[in-house]
Image (cartoon, rainbow, N blue to C red; front, side):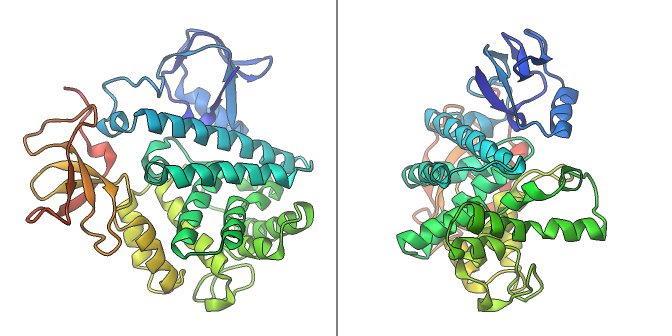
Length: 381
């Protein structure tokens, strides 16, 4: 049986065999198009994944329709497909752990450590591709599972830039991965409520950090440092956060790193009530914080880590060509290396064969503005 995450499903998908919610509950039969209302029903029921013994006949992300957006065609290379498969596997594993916690079952910390090792090993080998994947390759509404994986990736990269010792880097990454695990203890009616929360509901949501701390330190037997980093990720530099209203360096460095990673991840992820920001816009928002939510020194490291234009960002150049960022220069964040996607004459490079332009070495050409991938041509020749 093949497993697909709910947020990977798209209206119009057709399968060669029936798609099941459970072993004996059919979502749609074979050769029938998946509808938007089918996907909405899964989300309403809190179902994270479906299964099918068949293949995707229409709408397969690994064999995209040429009418899809140019950006998605370019991201559809063998490396990105492998990473998407790995990413889906991580989400499935973490979903299983979260479900066990929701039901009050015990989970083995060794399994979590193995999951983390798989993520960080892949990240060490495919750093740029992974940044691109979590910013632009993962489509659909983001859930607590994707938030956990993405926040872990970002936190780990910032921790590397900070030159944390290996055991401290592991503590940071575990805390980031489990930072919202306490949400499993919050009633689904509140956790998944559409629209605004009443004050008492908001206060209940805020207790998730305490539930997280207890789960990490008591049930999973991770160290106090791991528990405290997760507990503090909603504290603010100005002291107006929760649960304890800590400020400045009263907050652990690891907690300060997870705070900014969590905020950035939320900005670039889709939510039921808004579209995602592009990486550049999220970066500008982080930069304009002015010491309210985030440690200004951590903000500097964060910018050095991801760049003003994070890898995968689509940009319009001053010569009217369009490209995506493939490499940043920490000392010159406004002049990254750009892979050309549409040249000055309007030619589209559908096989990703455009040249790489290093703006550090190319005089007279600069980034005019960031581009939302939805603005790109359809990918038709």
